[in-house]
Length: 294
Image 1 (tube, rainbow, N blue to C red):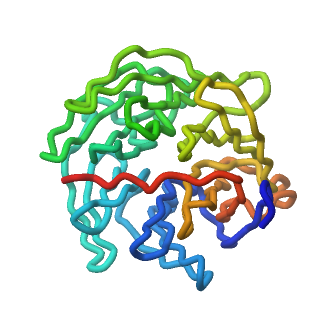
Image 2 (tube, rainbow, N blue to C red; image 1 turned 180 degrees about the vertical axis):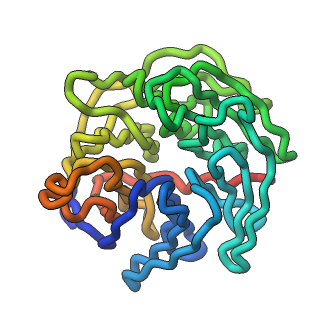
Image 3 (cartoon, rainbow, N blue to C red; image 1 turned 45 degrees about the horizontal axis):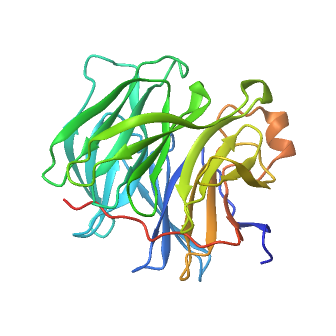
């Protein structure tokens, strides 16, 4: 693939395709369909896709050092073992907010699992929060008042966290204390013009410190420099990309998940590959995904 080229590597009809993560040991890409309540495992070399059905929506996943996956469900942190298909629920959050659910999540360089929540009915309500699951399975709420917590990731040295609030149309940067996971010095990293029709969704960081943000509704992935300037825009043949991550043996492929949710029959006719999995030749390499340490 030439730099910037986009290829549909798996035709699918995910309602909300999200949270892609590359597993080097299996040479496979795990990803989820939130609304479809599925975890998928795509094998690029064979072009095949395994599907695991869960009893409730699964909103994000990360690799676990011991084996298997760490996940967020609607309101629970959980472990899932693809080999045995055993699901083990951990902590349950926000019992007092029935409309809220988990959304985006990612592990930091120290193996802590960070996950945000959102109001599942009023997406622009400031009802979400950001949680940190430590290796000892202790859960800490580190921020409240989030307006649809979404994509997050960490700089290559782990000292900066990038955190998306979709309907604040903003990506913020925070300093991270590597020792205890405390965050500080919140500042605006990048904003998206609300009038453009787009909102920022999933996010990943490359080996050069570039921040790749998926812009939902307008069908594009934008790369920001570490200074927050746009230096690249990749356009997709579908309007609703959701998540992105680097994969492949050299981590030189950018995988992008997409959605069909809220699209009309006419819109789906114009973009029939909506819900499929795409691969992009980004021209830079990514970082190996951090695994949950617990």
